[in-house]
Image (cartoon, rainbow, N blue to C red; front, side):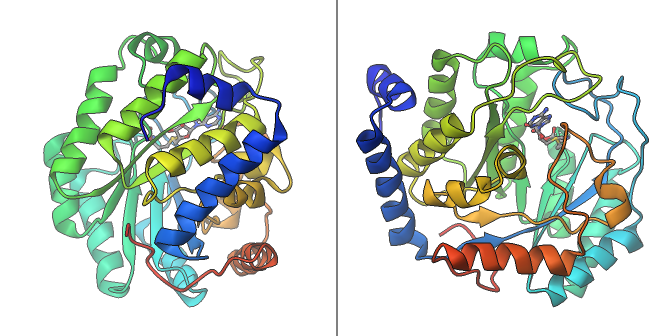
Length: 332
Ligand code: SAM
């Protein structure tokens, strides 16, 4: 779908419920045509909250004082074991940019997961690394990589990040990942400071052109201790409309109902599925580290066992007429 700026603005701002209902219905129709009534589960494992970067929005930015942790290889494998028993067939290893996770250590972890759970996909979300590093991780068995572009507008990027961080490098990473054969995910926060309809249009145009296999979007939520701690949070309604627009733009995309939506609204994830999303990412991290991975305030963390949250999410999805298969949920 190649949308005019005026149509795009109207879809985001209209208060006509019929237009919005039709938008969501069309998104769901396209999703169901490609993937059926399936929601794919990914087990999120937050491997480290050490980060060398100082993104202005992020609660684990290097200059924020928070208690730092990193998981051991054994802890990560334990999380996968628990997840596998619960029917997870994708593990997402996410973390800050932590130099402790060298290529050698990370490749060893990926290889060990793939050896122990050959029926599973491994997704990495470890920020920017060099092309050589991405190549080694791919060789070690990583299947997918999530790296939100954060904003497709260079000036906007410069207002969300310190000057030592580079818009071009982030975009280059996405191109490298694509060339190396990863299933690639990009994405952005909805309602990040200085975002406008124009910058959002650039995000959608970038997504339409880059054609990622996955897109992660969720509302911006202020994080204590960051330069943006007093900024307004992003809107759930706007996020839902953008999810639908992304689904219509790329009918085959894997589109998570993010925890940030679940944090902002008790039924946020259900609403996202009704707007065209088809992925959920329950947390498999050890219970005592979940609260420490505090990228924004009040991050959804039930504190319940992985088994409980998997059962809860399955029940929630079933209640809105969706199936949750035991499946890697690869891009169609
Ligand atoms: N370090 C990796 C990277 O840069 O891709 C992965 C971890 S990073 C914390 C994951 C994502 O969290 C970011 O891409 C960003 O969009 C999101 N995030 C960070 N701070 C946030 C906030 N305050 N509100 C909502 N999302 C946030």
